[in-house]
Amino acid sequence: MFENLCTLPLSSELFAQAAHPNEPVLAVGLSGGHVQSFRLPPVAGESSEDSDGDGDVSILSTGTNTIDTEWRTRRHKGSCRTLTYSADGEFLYSAGTDGLLKVASSSTGRVVSKILTPFDSATKSVDPPTLLHALSPQTLLLAADSGALHLFDLRTPSGLGKGKPSQTHRPHEDYISSLTPLPPTDASTSGFSKQWVTTGGTTLAVTDLRRGVMVKSEDQEDELLSSVYIGGLPSRPGRSKGQKILVGSSTGVLTLWERGIWDDQDERIIVDAGIGGGESLDSLVVMPDGVGNGGKNVVVGLGDGTIRIVQLGPNKVMEDPLRHDDIEAVVGLDFDAGGRLISGGGSTIKVWQEKMSLDEDSEEEDSDDQAQTTKRALEGSDSEDSDKNSDSESSDEEKGGRKQRKKRRKSKAKGANVGNGILKFKGM
Image (cartoon, rainbow, N blue to C red; front, side):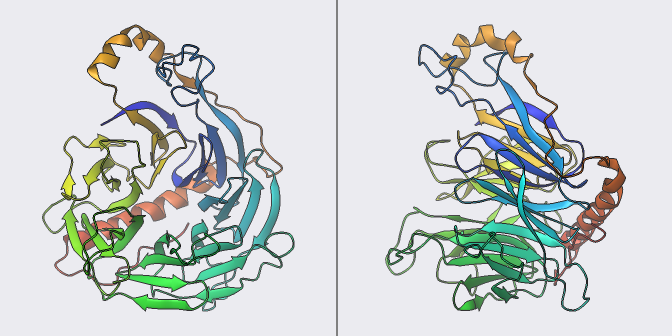
């Protein structure tokens, strides 16, 4: 279904990635503290080189298109754990193990605001972040290692005010591994989400902007690592509204949860099977409308570096998985504004596009030689953040902690019973 267009090497291990909501731009956060913004070439049919309008221009079909580094900076003294764009794409939020949350212009990388993240109430020390999500133009969510979930009101002066969250919740005993907003209901007047689903340890929880933690699932006896919302599925009166949350586990099982029924899972899809459990499902992304076979599909990134596509409805795992890496897990999956799949893991980013039909392939044979000239611009201008220290100086400890985390996950998958495992980024 997809073919690899190019592979982008990174200067250190990828910890986070985010696709711009409106432009073909990707931001990455690295173990060495760097944040980097890439601009992909225009999608087919939008390039000025596509003068005949036949839509045949892609990264592979011309030697002049490049993937450029818009800017690169060492944003955090520790690792950059997480980043996210604002809803309109104007700002890029990032948080690191240095205890800082920074807001920067997404186009220039210039920092416009920064705050200290709240300390861990138990240790009175920095509580490293795990997730950031811009729920709306008014609300930013920040999750941390301790399990705390902080809400910041962006309507205050200077964006984040004095750095104090307006609310703090603890939906899980373990750190929050994923966060997925629930679309607003028909009764919503703002048009923005006010509820979200989180996973942490072996439970799923739903939190409301005004009412706090509303419900928590039963213990799933399997660590829940990733989640995504999908709507438009067939509805069944009295049984299903056609809206589900998909959750990836540490043992290769994708569970489906009916919206509004949060005590336990509704269906299960075995994505990867193995003795004692399959590979972990570390990342999920829904395939956009207009991409793929026209059905409802979800792309799954696994702990062994493979990428699988699951068809919802028949709940079938498609054959011929993609390969991001031979060893490293796929920690990030996104679709850019042009519908291209972007996978991240280890120290590489890969860009994929839908395979062309046989007729299209024959028309494009002459472009094969040009495809080999595909390149990217390796250098970009730094913002005011320091870039004097190399990634290697701070990445060794990060990699050690990440590999230890993976070992713990592997041992859990092979055990007979799966309890409340701790998969924190120790030492990062």
